[in-house]
Amino acid sequence: MKPDIHPDYHPIVFRDRQANFQFLTRSTMTSDQHIEWEDGNTYPVVDIEISSASHPFWTGRQRLIDTEGRVEKFYARYGQRH
Image (cartoon, rainbow, N blue to C red):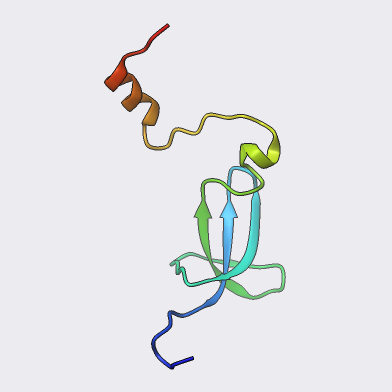
């Protein structure tokens, strides 16, 4: 690989707070928040909305996730039909 042309690829923790689930992986993402992992080292942490622990496809549970007002936008555009 050529030096100084690739982004920094480092360990990072992704955390799904709704499901109380976190995992350590490698990524080019960065974060100002840090967390102490099970091995005693400190890693940057990124909070995510959905992971395999909370996604309806993997859990078998349906739930409504409306973080950006999509339902309200739909009702405003097309009206609520009964």
